[in-house]
Image (cartoon, rainbow, N blue to C red; front, top):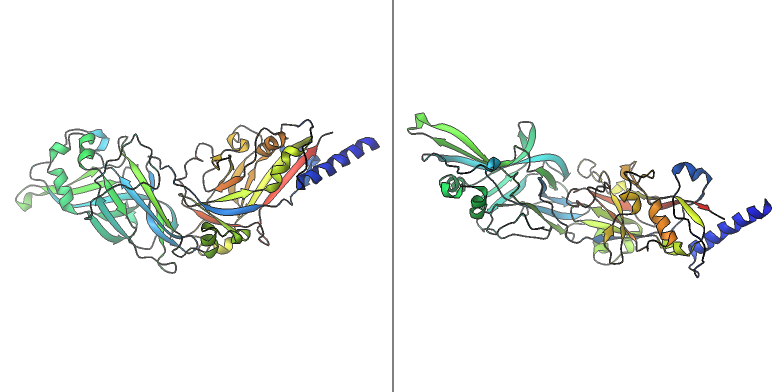
Length: 451
């Protein structure tokens, strides 16, 4: 019995020694399975691992061609200025063909209506300057467009108004009056209304922007607003009348839709971190990472991610007979940066992704198998903390089955079916840095030495 105790003690000392010092490889049999949470009671525990964090501007992201898009401008007191531009086709509803308006149809007004989902970042009570332009460049449903893609458009606007969301039926909407002469040209030319292919070849779509809105970080912050172009209320509305003399006039409305399988709906995002961003964030994005010891910054919609390095994980392949019971990484929200909790709610969930040798993001095993494994991956915001279980990932590093190149904290949904959708979250959050006095990140490691 004494011999077994000595062997166990020696194994533990050997583990700790190698964990903090890079020595030559030790050839021992490695255990390649994590244990269920119920076995943590019998495991060793360590949570004093050092971290290295830094904020990084992300590359352009793919914009998926569904109805959920963003529009608006926001002067964030922490992240600076962000503008979300929208490019969208408009279509004949239900793919109907050979549309013809009465010859005496006269347009009274026209407007674009966008259903606002009430998912936003910033102050939606700030009026924004909406400008609408007629596009001159084709968009194709067979192309994968990215968030840095712009399309050509005419320089004369079809609309230029200062408005904010308002109620329509059971929805909040953004309603943009459009030059009625443009609508008149559409309904007066039935040769272009034969089908959607001809319509979209002639009228290539709308470019809608708020980038010329005047904002400030004190009283006019503006907002990035998630809209639903697939909603039945969203569309391009033409209000017209027929009949002569005026006493016989009949008012009518025709709605072109944004929701069509042959339509493209695209976002372009522009970030200006030199316009009022927090100095810690600005310095990190310009190469000075000293401030990352105190705070790092994560933002959705192609904003920023945080590169995470836990140097001790580089030593794992040098270890011997150990089984990882649980490896939990905890990031803590710095609430002092949230000037208004209504305007700037942190992301409801995030993803902690593994990196490959080229710095590309990929799932950890724990996230990939989270729906079928007894080990829950996590990622949801709870009590101002984001917790991630990466036990299988750490075990594979220990066993030599996977090389460690670091991790990335990203504002995406941790569900594997949605993580790739980086155009889905606009929310942002400030995280405690690796030397923050109370909010530094933790790796909580439960492990079992095996003789």
